[in-house]
Length: 566
Image (cartoon, rainbow, N blue to C red; front, side, top):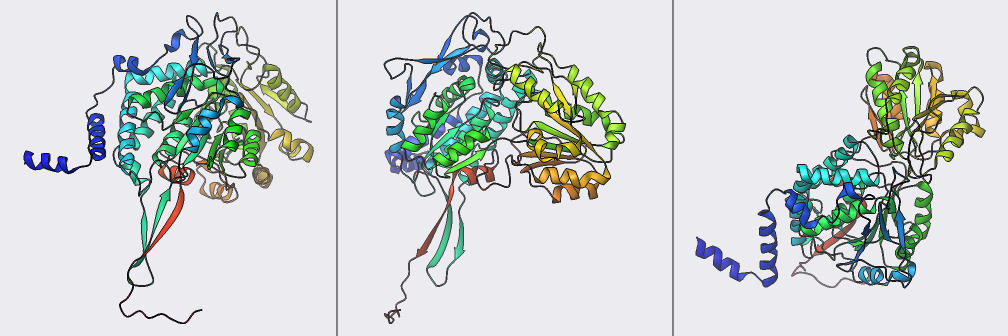
């Protein structure tokens, strides 16, 4: 038996033997320890901004580039987000300029349209990525690995430990979902019989080849990893441009992927400002770009790429509380507080507006939300810095809405006390402004009330059974449709709201929420053909591959004679 196995091995080509060795080495990997983390990690998260200044390099063409290519050697300084008196910056990144892009241009131009792999080319790479995902998922699931990334996230984007570790766990579960054969199953083909003997068609999922990925700061591990791995699974060669404020997290994860066996040439890692990344997309044959971030930047990229883009942009996310309020007030109040103020409201799925049925208002829901919000603290980071708005910008927006006739600030609307957050960021208490529904629906106020503010801020309005039609009108007129919640177990009410709305990720029932993007269900907007999903096999296939039909027609009948021309 052993002799037979050895003979079969010698019949393999050198390339196939190399592939077998790769898979064998990965399958024998043991669970990670602190020592294995030290073998790839290059920072101690708790020392950032205190005892060391770390420099985040680029990675292009399979090499880490530790210095800027341009002669001025500029770097972007990322300040400590919690302490304006920190002795050192949190870290620095390369301030790559347009003139520095040539290595990235060269790298992406080398990638064929058929990708690094596809169903007919180098299919062993599907198996390799199954093993890479298994290893990375194991490390992120280990106590040492999960805590390392949780602390790295907290250093860059201050959030509670529960929020940070939850992000790591979702990412680990995603990676484990695509271990083994599940990567190649993403490219499962299907066949259809043809018109005659010898003819049949096969539909394939085909990569784009060179692609771009531009990711936000708020989930610096989960969003980039889920989209990056989807791009790689399908056979693409991506360049990754993370947010400057959280670049360190993905730099460390990329080092982990290299440790897990990923070819260093499979991903180019670019630190730069937004316009430079756009120039890279325009100058190279990047065939699809996936962008997660603000709607303003998303529209600019859509124009620059001539529509070759998938967007998961701004979400002004709504929650409607139905008439059946009895017995659920405490739970609903807790969930409303979590949806609006966890991560200081800096989630694309955060509750931006709350429609409160009069039954909830009479039962004291708003007082309970106020009480829950008052328990948030900078000490445990259940409230923290806002990284895209200054304090004054948030307070100005609050006052603007409070000046609407009969509107008022329910709570918040003040700067945090005794904080050391740098002035370039925001530091405000959890805030809610009550705006009467009839006033909100007036043309001069509607846009003001339904524009997302990426901060611990929400608009609240009330309604009753007679004004539900106004609520549905308000939902119809909103421009972005990411997440939503219909908080009701009343089937007729829930169906009425669901039937007249379009949000891509909608929760329904007394436990409905707006936030939460786990790995077990689709997360993404609806109502826009450019909308990008994340996390599921369907999302990966839709975003990171296209359909290719190959029609096989092989047998010419022996009785065939040439017909007259037509």
